[in-house]
Length: 340
Image (cartoon, rainbow, N blue to C red; front, side, top):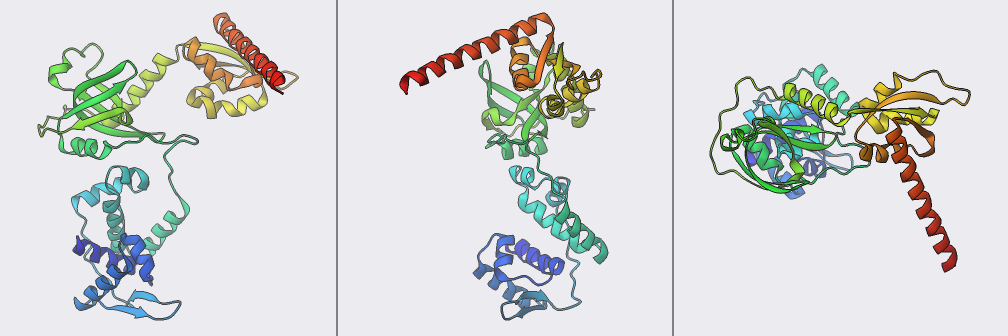
């Protein structure tokens, strides 16, 4: 561990120039006292580290010194694929490896490319989670990721809406979508026959695993399985299955602006169907929605900015929901008046 830390310290000074002891301690996640000891160790090994005194001081390498001890380990090399998502990398237990890999990569780059890399990092940042929604707690993510990498069978306890179940799974891959982690896995051979009709490969929300265990058994990854291709097709099937009916909705200008934000791709497609605005600026669109029960909740978010014209069953369901809400608020108003 100390050898890795000394190399990281050396690369920090090479890539960033002068750094203070507190800055180095924060980067390396150690104490300031440890930084001083590590700097002494570098000097004793022949690395020309110079200490500048005073308020603007710090540690720096003697001008012109560069190291080429920048070989990536296999884990560090793999972690580079998560370079744009440091938060998810930490969730997977690869945060330190990613930081070390980035330092080594910067050190190996020519000066002009290293400078461009730093400027890109300063100007672009990926924040994966969606707005106004906390990410799932995922205490078992690191172990699941290890099982995915090592092709180890997972024995799991998983919470479904119909109740918790015990499953033995072949973990094939992990997907991060909208800040939520999903495991793509195949039921172990003993269960695969029973699930054949529905497809043995399924998607599981990582935050719903109550317990996971890796007994040590390995599995053979199915030939030809491609995680990205499966995810695209699975997402398409899920959306097609959930949004089976079309609502004809009259929308205000404000509601049309909100539609992509609240309905995603379905909202974007709906805007493409919009007819010409009427005298008040309202326009009619065709919006793919889920069952009436789900559609009512979704459409109520638009409040008075929308009017459902059809189908008749959905309009009646919305009318009933609005009437119930109005009645409830009238009763609440009376109770508030009586209490005052």
